[in-house]
Amino acid sequence: MNQLISDTAILWLLPIIFMIHDFEEIIPTPGWVQRNKEQIYNKIPGFAKSRVEKMSSLTGSQFSAAVGVLFVLFSAAAFLAYEYHFYLLYMVLSLGLFLHAFFHIGVSLFLRRWTPGVATSVLLLLPYGVLSIDYFIRNDLFVFPDILYFSLIVILLFMPFLQFLHFIGRKLARS
Image 1 (cartoon, one colour):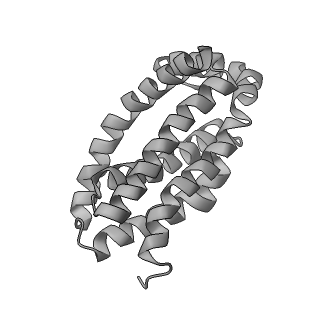
Image 2 (cartoon, rainbow, N blue to C red):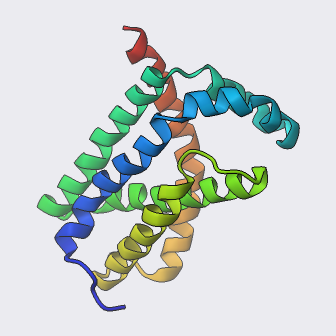
Image 3 (cartoon, rainbow, N blue to C red):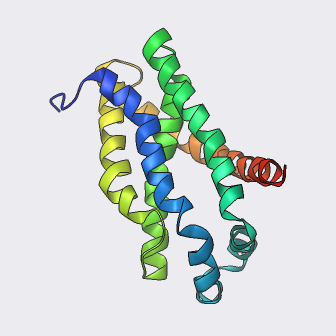
C-alpha cells in the first residue's frame, strides 16, 4: 500500500479519531440505551443483559469521565510513539480501537438498527485501523501473523480495562 498520509499524522490521529468516535457515543448513548433497553433485552443472550443494565444506569457525565481518562491514555500513547519511538501502548490502543469498530458494526447488525458509534466506526475507525496496521508493517514493528495474536490479547485485556474505566467514571462523576 502506498503511504497515504505521513507517519506523524498517523500517530497523532489516534487520539483525534478516538475523540470523534466517542463524541458520537457520549452524546446519544444514555438516552438511546434507555429508549431501546426493552428491545435490546429481548434480543441479547442472558450473559449480556447485566452489561446492558450497567450501561443503562451510566449517566452522561460518568461516561464522559471514563472517556476523558481514555483520551489522556490515547494522547500519551501517541506522544510516546512520536517522541520516544515507544510503540507498544500505541499499538495496543490502535488495535483495540480497530477491533472496537467491529463490535459496533456487529451490534448494529445483530439488533438490526443504528447504534451509537456505528457511523464513525465505519467511516473513521476501520480506515484508520488499516492505516495504522500498514504503519506497523512498513516500519517493521511487527509482521502480519503477530497482529492476529496481538489482537487476541487486546480483546482479552480490553474488556476488563473498559469495565475499570467505567468504574473510574462513576467515581469521578460523583465527586
